[in-house]
Length: 361
Image (tube, rainbow, N blue to C red; front, side, top):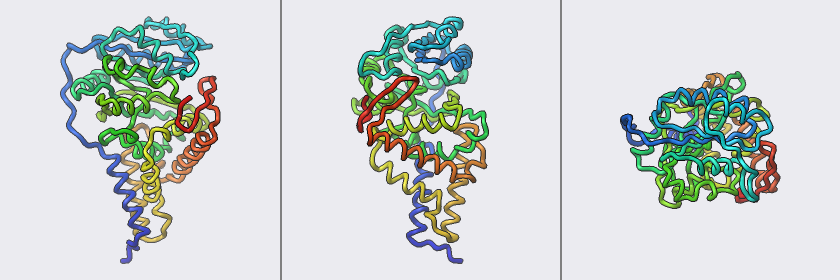
């Protein structure tokens, strides 16, 4: 039987092996959960026009199994009922001031929350998240046990609409390029602004969000800065600690990831582009029509279908209809790259930002 195992098939096979390697958890086992003597956590929520999301978030925070917690909501100049919702929940409400020149809105809101926080640990989370009851105990345990100064973690995507459940391969490709399961290193690091857990001394050593005030996003710059300054950074790889629905429509999905990709290009190694080529070759079989390429394509689709189960509510059909995710991934990448090269203004949360090729505002 001729498998057609020439170079044109071996390259996609290498892409499959690379995908499996990037998406396979490795490292030491998780530590046991700490006792009840846990440090105080200040959980800080930057919120701009989040009246629809806040009730679900705050209800989930009320269910957290953590004995020493303060919740701070920073109202980032909202024009809706965000402060009313926060005040009714009984959390600490900070009325945010107008951001200074050169600051991103989220960074400024987070910094204002950190200034009033009294915890030994600071957890920055977004209004669109919902936290699982034992999640904070597990991440605090991991942060303290690892000796890191900053910890982030993978989200679990809720995907209430069926079209969202078809985007599993998109998420698998994205994670494969940011390598959350390997050892973090500069320009090859995963971080998500929806869950950034700091030791207070590490946060202060970095200079807080002021250190990344002019960046288009805050998560990747903070993680890279930790690595550059020799502050330990860790990605928690256990069971999900929070769930999220990031975008409610395909237009929002494209716009949001366009922004994230644009910022990510500034903090990614050029080798990530090479990895992307090999992974795309694995997904498409290198566009070769022989048995060997077909087997690589089937194995890649099967692996993506398996791995996406831990990332959210994704449908197996999404792995079969991989051209949809691949087309969306390529479209978002092309739009983000053109935005970056042309220095187009970014409109986000009703604010306009302009950045150069470096990603700075």
